[in-house]
Amino acid sequence: MRTVLGYLKPYRLRVACGVLIKFAAAVLELILPLLLAHVIDDLVPLGDMGPIWRTGGVMAAVAFGAIGCNITANRMAAWVSMEMTRTLRRDLYEQTVRLSCAQMDRFSVSSLVSRLTNDTYNVHQMVDKVQRGGIRAPMLVLGGLTLTFLLEPVLALVQLCVCTATFFTIYRVTRRGIPRYAASQAAVDTVVRIIRENASGVRVIKALGCQGRERRRFDEANAAARDRESAAGGVMAAANPTTDFLLNVGLILVVLVGALRVQEGRMASGQIVAFLSYFTLIQTATLGVSKTFLRISKGAASARRIEQVLRAPMDQPVIASEAASSAELGMQDVSFSYLGVEQDLSAASFAIRRGQTLGILGPTGSGKTTLVSLLLRLYDADEGTVWVGGADVRTRQRRELSGRFGVVFQNDTLLAGTVYENISFLRRLPREEVERAARTAQAWEFITGMPGGLDAAVELRGANLSGGQRQRLLVARALAGRPPVLVLDSADSALDYRTASALHAAVRREFPDITLVVISERIASLRRADHILVLEEGRITHQGSHEELMKHCPRYGRMARLQMGEEAV
Image (cartoon, rainbow, N blue to C red; front, side):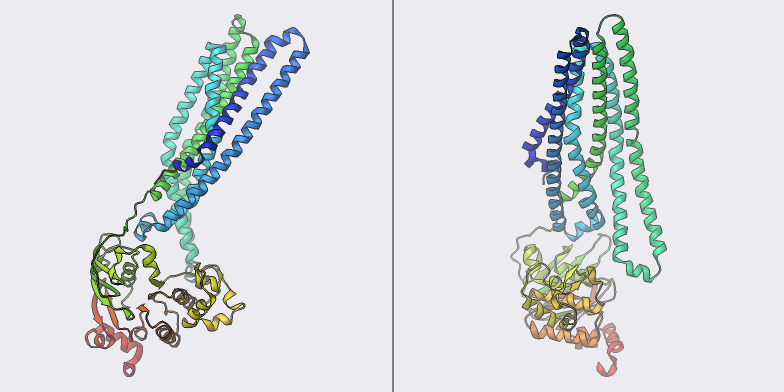
């Protein structure tokens, strides 16, 4: 993977052209003090206004030429930085999408959002500022010093000493500023995370009256971000006042030494004016360098954070294996841990054939969703083998594996758009397929009651729908692509028993060959499953049919009697 600055390579010709134009502008700016000295020392004593007007016209043309060159180069720099950042942000987004869930856990979603927005902006500003001032300013400094040494070496030494002190100050300030800006970006990640948590959980926060606590939590994170930004800004704030002080000291020294040289007859008065012009020009360029280094400080810290994502290795490679199984879905001695401290799933083994239904039951935190995540290869098992379609899940390409599953997760979300767009989900499915999926999911009745039917508006996260309506739309989305395997992770928790029963019956009727995985706390949703897993603390304690579990699993039998009553059981 190329570095962030490697994204400038496609635009190297335009950058080179901009550098040449900036060089021409710098040459024109450096000529002006020489022409001014010529007017004062050579033309004014003659008393002839003709040559003075002509030279003044040349100076005006040179000034306008410098302005035109700088405007042109700046427009080119702006275009290059925008296009480079657009490509960088696109690749960063694509890499973020390709990251495994384990990698996203390590980076954190809030940090990835910050890198996609704030960090790419800082890189954009760095590239733009370097092209505008980072090229022109050194040219003016080097060119000005060269000309002043040719005019008067003694005054040039004064100017060189001031420039050296200025650059040393900028170097020291920048060296201390870059680590502080990196820490500041990490603090911004925390602020973004808290904002995301509050935005997604606003209803719960208001329902429990936790606004004050969340406000304090945000204030603490915001204050930490402010303190780190203040620490970085406090270091960088020393640059401009110090360089201004050195500029003023240098001007005083140039005037004093120059006056002595004129008094001794070793230089003309026009040369002092030229030197003052050059000194102001050089110091202004030096200040531009300090501002450029400020942008580089932020941009370099952001570029390193972006490269961490771009260079993240693919930790879920496709392997070659001839091992096969007769199971459509299954596991063999699978163990897994999210953090590597304790097992979240231990020695899990089961197998179901195509067209069968797998039920999964267990308390919160028992490993139900973890088991499904391993089947989907959102994570890789630490030990054992996961079977999908009769093959090791690690031998299947990501696109092929995703095409085999239709999934409704426990905390799934809806997009801001129409009902059709939410069910089709960017797959451009025929409306007939969408309608069939909606009917099977028991959603068609309330969809037709909405203004516009399939074209009715759905707000972000389904805010204008009830919990049951959202779940039925999500089931319709999973069914619309006719997947071989359908996973329902607590997808009927907001449905009444009658609707949930009708949904499961319709799925079996309309999609008879589908392999169904149902995670639920409702025995009524699991009792007709061909194979049921009972999980506790990451272990499959019992497995079998409903009848077998009623006989051999006390917990399952107790839950069945509590939910369905003795007579129903």
